[in-house]
Structure formats: C-alpha cells, structure tokens
Image (cartoon, rainbow, N blue to C red):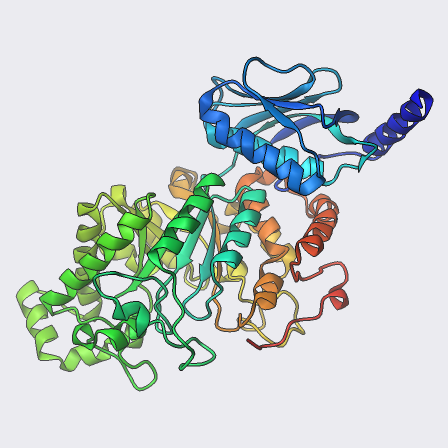
Length: 527
C-alpha cells in the first residue's frame, strides 16, 4: 500500500509541475513562484486561526471545502497547527494577502485585514477546485503568492427593475463575485419599469410600483421585502462585498410615480411620468424619507441616485409654472440647472445621513462635493465627460458601454442584446480593456477608483440569459480590476479559464462558451 501511495503522489507531482507557468487562479495574483510540488489536505488536516477576528473566515473555509470537495476538516483554536492550514493577521499591506503552500509545513494565509485573509482563502479554494481529490487526499500545488488588488473598486451592477430575479439568484451572483474577488455590488433597484424595494412609509411603491417589468407591464408585483434585503446584505458582507443600492432620480421614476402621482412632474408620450417634480417641496421630503429607510438597510453608507437621461422626460418642465417659478427664484438658467439643483438637494439629504452619493457621469458639473461623491463614467462615446470628472477632481469608477456593458452581445451573430454601431463586447475586448487605453494623465490616475461592469436587463428575461451574458466575462472583469496591467495575458487567461467552464457547468450556470459557442447556444427571450 505504501508503494502504491508513493507512486500515486509522484504521479500527482508530475501533473502539477509539468508545463505549470502560473497558478490556476483568476484573477492572476500579483507575484507568485513555485508550483512544482504539492501539499495534501486530508480529513486530518486542521484549520487554525490566530485571532478571534478570523473565526468567520475559518468557518467559511471549512464549509467551502466540505461542500466543494467533501473534505470534513476540523478547526483548532489553541495553537498553530503543523502541516495544516493557518490563518494569521500580520503587519502587511492593507488589502493584500500572502498564501504560502509548503510540502512539509502546510498552508499559511496572512494579511493585515480579515478581508485580505478572505481573499487568500478564495485563492486557496480556486486551487482546491482544480486539484485532484482521491484516496482521501486533496493535492494542492505548492505556491508562494504575494497578492494585492490593482484597484479598490471591483464592481458589478445588476438591474432588477427591468426584470426581477430574486434572492437565490442574487446570492449566486454574490458567490461568483466573491470567487473572483469582486467587492462592489451595485444593485439597480428602481427604474421606470419597476420599483423593487419595500418602503414601509410608502408601501404602494412596492405594491403598485412593483407591478410589471420590461416584458409585461401587468406582471404581478415583484420586489424585495426589507427582511430579504437584510438577508442579502448579510450574505454579501460574509463575502467581503459592499452593496450599493440605486434609487434612480429625478428621471427613470415612472414606477414610483404610478404609486404616488402627487410627486410626479415631467414625461413624454414615449416616457410618461418619467421624472419626479423638482419644484414641489413635498418631493424632497418624500424622497428623503425613502432614502432614510434605504440607508438603514445598507451599512456601507453609499447610495446611488442615478441622475442620468433626465432629458427623456424633463421637457414638460419648460411649461410647468411651478418649475418656471423655481428657476426664477433660484436663478437657474436652463433645465440642466434644474437637474443639478435637484441632485444637490438630494445629495444634502444623503450627507445628513452620513452617506456618500454616487451618480452617473451626467453629474460631472453639478457641483457635488468631491469628498462625498463618486461618479461613474459610462458613455464611452463621450470621453469629454470623463475629462470633466477628472478636471473637477471627482473620484471616478470606469464602466463604459464599450466594453463593460454586459447587456451587449458577446458574438456578432447573437440575435438578442445590444450592439453599438456594429460594436459589441466579446470576451477578449473586455479582457484587454485597461486604463492605458484612456490616456489619463499620470496626475489624475489616483482619481480612478476602479472598474465596474453593468448588466442592464431589457433583454435579460430569464436566468439563462443572465448567465449567458455574465459568464465568463465576469472573470475577465476581475482580472482587469485586480491584476497589474503589465501581467495580463489573454492566452494565459484563456488557459486558466477553461477549467472554470467546468465549474460553471457543475453549478448549473448557462454560460457562453468562447471556445465552442455551439456548445451553449444563445438562450431565447422568454420568461
């Protein structure tokens, strides 16, 4: 039996070392060496954590190894375990971690923060997912990894106004975000098509505003209760993900205005009841009450207020005597000034709640205080908007339609989804995107917080379509936002990605297969 085991271990070692150039981790770590040998996790392996602050991370690792690889390992708190898995807080750079896997001494994950320890655990789990588990042992390649993110903001946005997906699908997305070390979930909960969050003071927002979606304006109301929101927020926090809710205003307000028409003011035949009324004092109290409840549900104290595409519905303001009176009294020269006035007042409401305001790039010249504001540049065809953000020293998240809108198709012959003048967002275009392509002056790069992909759901009518448009581009997004630009290599990424497709398959994810698109045909538009 001993001879057989020695032969088996030697065989595994040859598999790990042959042709190994980088660890099987996405996003690729900052620095790494090794990979020639292996350490075996067995049911006798123990997890030790050096500080009570790491208890949650230790139990997360234990649970994940059991669920992923059927390894029921135990946790030890008394002293560091030899030839086990040790988690320790040390004086290292904030946001980074070290993962050392040694054939003899075992696995050590160190960081200055619990978040860093968690990121190290994720890297270990990715290695475990690709490791052979047989004969009661899990062979992990021996890597020495020093890793930290290139950008602090690594985000993904899901629009649930246009189509609603529910608690379990959102949790699944959070799981995959954590797996790829993404840390900001921008949750678009309100728009013209539906209001998806319960507000106790104004129950009709969900009960009436929640009726309908982009496919069926008469679909039964769909929304999250406040207890469901709290459940998802806790789930995200366990995975070191901040949730940023978006309550869109002053435009995209049709669903809310169906519920409380007394605060409506503006629209068109194509976009009826599109805006909140900017000249009614009651509008500001109404929206502040809503934001107060939203703030209580989201501990990150960041709320996105939209501020985009107001021109779809604000032309009626020209003929509204109350708006005209407001413009005269506040010396507002045009409708854009009215928008900015509205947003500054609502920003003040957020500031009174100790919140940071987020908004789209239309607010570049609204005069929002830079110390309490984050704006998202989304209009790839308007680089001047990005320039305005930087000129005004506004902290900025990069999320242009090309290539970071995931509602754009991945291949040219897909029938559903968006294109822009023939342009779309295939995997390599997403992966190859970088700050260098934007020609940002070195003096302004510190204003760039990071990158975010956005999934608008006009054509995302079911979970298969959500999966198909998100995966595997989510993995490419992760490498944009985490891995140093000079280390990125699409061929190497593609090699690592192939194994992840098998994980998607196992998890029931209907992904787009960039290596064999016929393997997963484009899902149709159906509920």
